[in-house]
Length: 396
Image 1: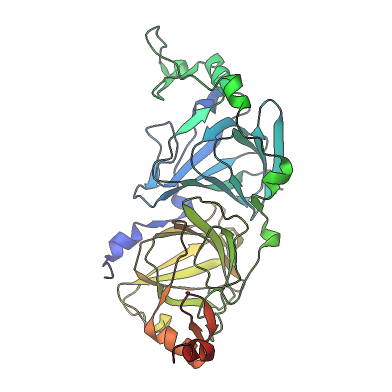
Image 2: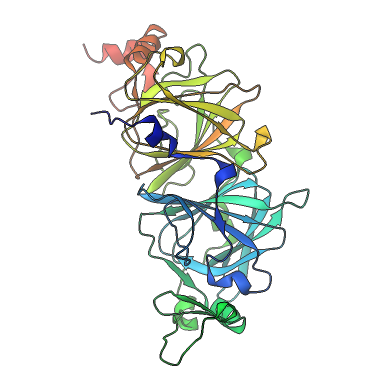
């Protein structure tokens, strides 16, 4: 059954970059020299922020969480560890990723459009190099699960924060002496891993970590990933990045296939192109990286965008449209009928994140399926796009 949402409920799921709120004291490192100021954003879910006052755009559970971080040139996020997947999506500037710290620090650089999946149970950090004009770099972050298990700081980070009058209790409460907090003898400090425990963690070489970075320039785009791609006025393509997404190209495999609890892929729509009316049983998070798109959502299927008379409409923009604040996002609810159109003069590129490690199968509006069939295309029994004359023949 298709859920029914009011325009007001759908509007509440739109997360414009200009309206994002952030915290500069989300973690214990905010007073450590060289670690601030750092703007931490929580778009979907609270993430791993240790600040109970962290602003959150949408708290609804999605099976994964989406955040963001903006940092000026030279600002560093010190060593810490996560228990679920952590994915960095760089959309502005460039960053150096650091990991290992047992004892040597290893490093790899990413820039705009690159996506890095950091393994669980290793210490990691990162440093911003900013933009070419000296502005802040920005990364979206994806964290696996609705409960991430929190964050574990390295011993050196805890000690550096302590030297600045910031303490972390065993139950993850921040005590800041500069704000009137006082550490007392009856309080228990969070105990970090011992050097011996750290030495037993897996070591990832730079070559191995490189396999977990998907460069934008190396994406494998397919124009056969969607049933409607060959139809007039459509033309969208998909490049998978992590896990099984919604690509229906049978030869399409993401470069990173281990379980994350969510998939990541890029969707590209040419100027004047669109993605026809379709439905997906999973929630999705869309973030416009380049260009701008119109999003149409309706409780019932519609033949074409022009016929979506009662659709709720949003315009979402990315960096390429001069959106200095960053990238607009939308938390698409499950099972609604939706379509996208690029009304700009350049191609639009959208980041798509979908919960679950399984393949995501699109349901197309009946009119779209009929138009694809007329053009000679259909969906086979395994859910992939193929020539309809062979798909039909197999059913005789």
